[in-house]
Length: 101
Image 1 (cartoon, rainbow, N blue to C red):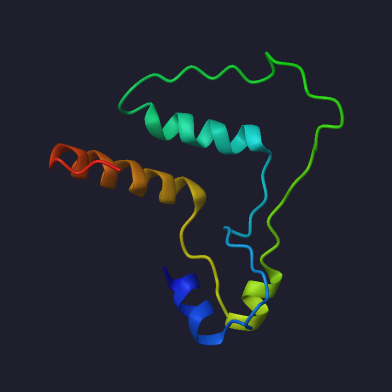
Image 2: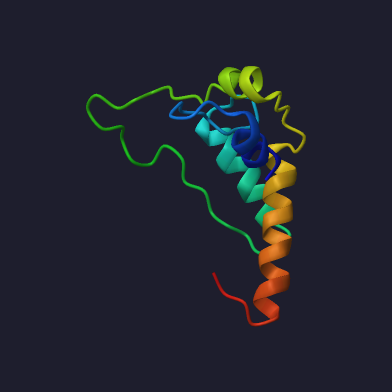
């Protein structure tokens, strides 16, 4: 939310910004973090590498937040793992209250 606020306040109109943690990891590492966060509630099975890569598969894609930092002063304050944990807990709490996304 802070990044969106800063973009509204200081972002350059028409310029594209990536919103991310600023820490790049392999997709498999992000998936492992998500699996670990869910393991408190269930046992998700991860099967990375079972399906072969497609021809001309993009093997690297990262979100560069240098423009976001430079133009707005945004500094990420929540790690990916902590953000996933908070999202899971929020969803579980609100699902129990009858709120469904």
